Amino acid sequence: MSLAAATDLAAANNENLANLSNTLIYSAMAVYTLAFFAYIAEWLLGSRSKVGRTAAALTAEKAAKKTTAKAPAVTVKTAGGTAVLERPKVVVRAAAGARDVPDGPGAHGGDEQGDLYGRIAISLTVLAFLIEFGGVLSRALSVQRAPWGNMYEFNITFSTVAVGVYLTLLALKKNIRWLGLFLITTVLLDLGLAVTVLYTASDQLVPALHSYWLYIHVSTAIFCGAVFYVGAVSTILYLFKDSYENKLATGGTPGRFATSVLERLPASASLDKFSYRVNAAVFPLWTFTIIAGAIWAGDAWGRYWGWDPKETWSFITWVAYACYLHARATAGWKGRKAAYLALLAFGCWLFNYYGVNIFVSGKHSYAGV
Image (cartoon, rainbow, N blue to C red; front, side):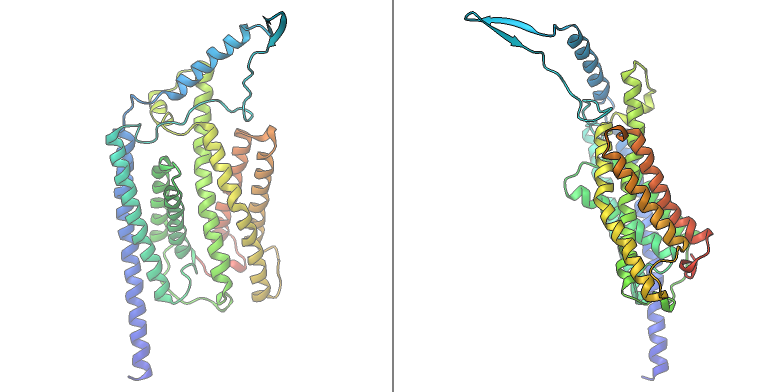
């Protein structure tokens, strides 16, 4: 076989793999859509009669406070002529603003039928994840490089990793199935944006990207973003659940929709703790991502740091998450204030992800979208 014929055959194989990748991504979107409807069914068909734990707990908490307020400061008993002092038990909250509220029963509402739809949704999510992973792998094989050389490839890889993080936490017996509906909704939006606005035909990289740092730096950035995303979703849900608990604690009456949805979520204290642990766990890796990017910049451009827009916003994101973690460790900043700071930090990451690549010119703009 001549060299020209071999080259043409290789090009044809690469084109076939690229077309296969596109087909798999569209197939994954179809299965994610089925999973979305299964999650909806879990929420709608799960029992609503088994919710109400938050209201019951807060009512009991009020009654306990009234009883404690009326109790004597010290009770004196006699035992064989000796006076024994019995001090009343004091309940101390574990954190500022925390309440002794149990977690909700989950999206299925503690109902067998709802749980069935939830399990179907998880199975479909696993199937869609495997199909999408096949699409990312086919894309990599078609260009014979890491599949994150442009915004389209970054998007499909990011959504794959985000779903992978969710499924991994489920496999580790973490009860986060309540996250499924919100995750799949945004994954579908992300993939829709990828295949319409951000789609780029498979092509080779510019010389500056031909480095093993492409695998190290960008892969860690994608993983960090996926974990930050999980933390941001749980933070948003925390804010809604905390407002709901506050309304109940002050004697308010939330609407039926809010009661049906928010009662099934974990308690606000649990959501707050989960989002903090997720963000704290991945922050050191984000630090490594920035350091790895600086080393790569030194190899590619002859300088480690030049305040390029991507570098600048990566650092701003690092500072924002560092402030959040520091504030979260300070008693006065636990709860809603820290949550707002966490969302601000994730907003910085989002702007670094979309805004800098699309709207700002810099050395990281050579790949276009």
